[in-house]
Length: 283
Ligand code: ADE
Image (cartoon, rainbow, N blue to C red):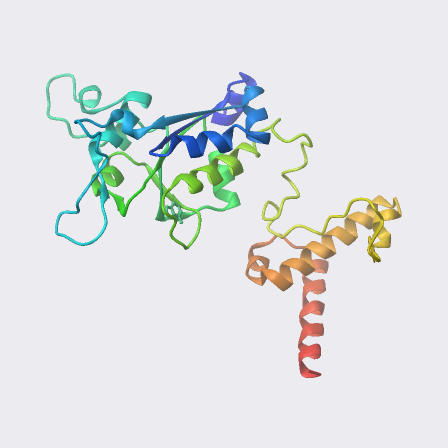
């Protein structure tokens, strides 16, 4: 049985452990709306751990100057290792061979079951497919950096994965971790009121989503497309699919190559392309 099926059958929540130097920021977001309800329903747990609680010395220092010089501060390894090992277990003692052989395993090898994910701009890019992959796990640890970066030993010997939410640089990993927690949680069975909600999402089907309308049928003279008021479900479905194709073609043509399209749909895209070439020729 897959990890998530066992978890779901046993009514076990997906457990996030978020390690950060800004716990208040993370707590605030996870206490609202759908994430709040998902926790109350026991579908997910989100534990937020302050890395500074595991720092030592009078000043509870979590950063230091980079060896070799250069600007910026580097996140020290000791408090990050201590925090993750206190929460997830592990550490050199536990992983050491029982016959007294020297410790050779990395943390990643000693603790394969729980992914330990660093949020950095250098990681693999977070997509809906990665969210779906993570939604299958039982427990996920997320480490948020501050300062210029992590001491490389955190990357090499503690993390099992590294994720970026896009090609830009934030001041820390907190927003990225919250993006990940949010996108993964809403995929868990039972989290969204409408169980089909996540299926039509932009990106879930490989296409952008069709346009949505609600009441009133006319607002400032702008009308809701007639077809949506017709009650004709098959025609509405066909209209929505065409609009999703049109929108994807116009805004994200790069997504079309990987999308699962019928011969008819490919034909529809070819016609859109032809029409836009002709329109450009008449400009
Ligand atoms: N930390 C700083 N920038 C980031 C990014 N783009 N993704 C994930 N974590 C980050």
